[in-house]
Length: 152
Image (tube, rainbow, N blue to C red; front, side, top):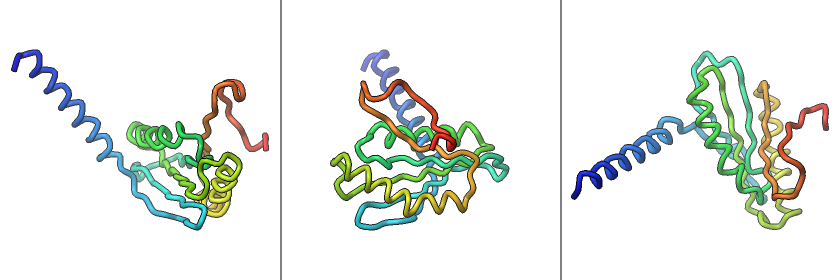
């Protein structure tokens, strides 16, 4: 095996080990907080120091056909928890199992799961910020936005 191939193989092994280490070190503690015929909600607490001064709740997967945020938000939560030890991050992962691919029914089922299991838990934990993940098809809406409680 040539020197160049060895360097490439070793580099790939190091990259793989770093990615694996990231996932192992940032694994959150999780518990199912609710489940019914519509789906389930898992609450994941990502590691933080005991000196956390800010608490952020993140809801992902509420609208089952919005695939991007269901994948990205948990990764962002992990990365943020690693780089911000003063922040406690809780990710509520919603998995719709009843009609997840039907637009209206899937959305309604996800919103029902959030209403039944997430809202009360968030109210009890009193976070400083709540982020609800969404993504949309090109041409729907304009750019990105931040919704505030005063907009409801």
